Length: 369
Image (cartoon, rainbow, N blue to C red; front, side, top):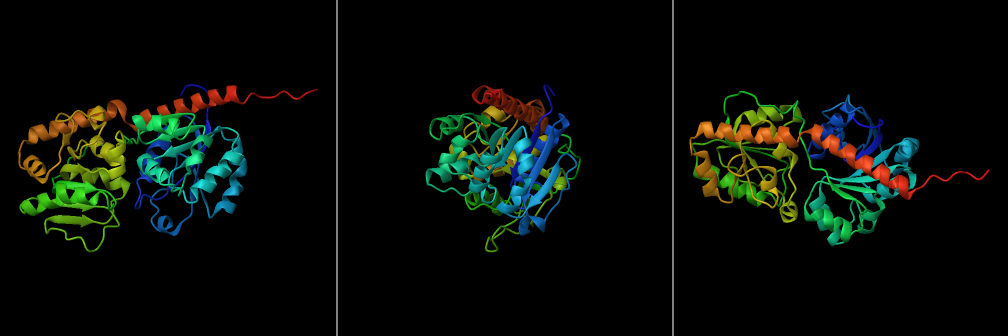
């Protein structure tokens, strides 16, 4: 760590439960690494039944507290006022009101951490203000974006953000490591059901499964509709807890990365699952979007595909040496640039820059004798 210790308050969707959301694992890896840099963290989470029933973490790297509603959140006024930075996350319930309250109470940097930036921009364009309003973007001193590239320019030029900065997802490289295990599936996919991802899952996994009854497949994740016709050689797992992710990837000869429509349109929007699989050295077959080739080198670190024929050809290639080399190269890229420690250092730098900027914009007034 360089510089003084920082105290931050994070108001996020969930830290305690990874059920049905990718936010929890993102926060866990980022904030645990941030704490290792010597900083103090308070995480405030809305106490909702669907996460309360599936909690799978009691953090030792930060203080986790729950609030029941906006009135209850006000009980943390002193902590918010005294923090060096307050970070409000995307998809927080009553997020617009939470953001306005935090703006009123915070005396340090107020940041918005958008783990869903392309989705957010799509909502803002249609006037949907579920968790942040268009005219609220400029009220945040710092906009930490899941997406890079031209999205950052859009946030600043169209919506008035004073500082839009990339903060991609990452992976805890101490937990996500390669494991030796017998291959259980030729191709797996780990992700919560999403209507706009389902056609790609159909094309790149279910159709290859139908064409290859001698191969084995798996789709893991909650909320899939009951009316999906799963081929007989596709195993379904309703939920895989984060501690079991490395074992899941180790049992996969290849794993599939599928990107939501808004994130494909925005580009430069890697998912946390992409980094997790790569850290486990599991070879990845991915759909294609702008900026992916800047993160991983195609055909050396990742395989890009658009058709069921492509997928079947990859699975039947039989080059186990090349498959292992692909996974190892992808892991090397993760360790060089995309671990939680890298992201925590980036977060610290963004916060310190914002603190310095605000110090010049909000001069301390000396009382008149």
